Length: 452
Image (cartoon, rainbow, N blue to C red):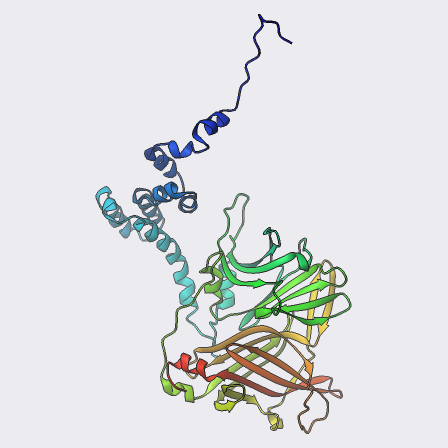
């Protein structure tokens, strides 16, 4: 205890505590706008864009034409077209900068940064594969741009876990992506699943900035009606969710073992790059074609495969429509008629192999289906990438070939697919004896902008 003549030692407090107490934690906002602008002038475009979301004052200052015009001129200097540099420097003079509305140079820069990168791949995607009707260089562009896909799982408390892809399998009109590594949670603790496309750097280095994420799909895993039992083997059971997402669970503990998604090539690069973290890419409506095309031949391209190999690939053209009255009005395309034996196609065994944590297995009688229907103008009319499963057919067709019959059904708001298979024991093969697709007439009218 100190004596009356002794002084107590001086208690020092951190400077930030004094500032926070005196300014209620808003000491940055008390700085003059000129000083904040000077600080912002040392930021690059990515950082300046992000800091504009801190508060209203930062948003107004970070959109200053004075800052973005300098960044725009700097970006143009990186280009190889030297003749334009002098023109741009003259255009970005102090008088012209102030004449433009707020955010003008910011939009111009972001457009410039994105434009020179996407010009090449958009040109490459114009070359179509005559067999599939999809861009022929899709796989090449995906690999050149280092596009990958991430899964984000959100639990009941809002905590997110991100998983990077472990395996991809490319077909001529789709890619199957698998995730099987990492510390996976139990299924009943996960509320939602998000699939994002990302562009990874060619040679990632420590301290790389966060990558842009483009939302492709978001699925509520706990919502009833969005999940169905897909298959099982001795180690895992597989659940199927909407839009072809399948989740493998370890038997007994409901922990996730792997996740698989089949992605169609139609607008895949745009969906993987041009969306945002929370909003998917929405393609613009294509121009309408001649109404006569709705009565002419369609093309159907179908591939059955799994994450390892192709099971079957067939192309049918031309196919002609006919109306059917079944639960509403539909337009039907018959690619394989069970009455015509010459059209029947042999198919190897269906299976879905998987691998996770050093273990592997195979789920029988299920696989991936990639289906593309093109109109006569070779425009995509209906594109499907999903998982499908065989079921024993209850109403047996009257066929010349005797054998156990199975049926594969797929349906969504845009159309339906029905396939019938016969197992031939002596050949140890399935035979595809029926393939029918149906579309609502309303879809045909929308596509061709008129009556079908």
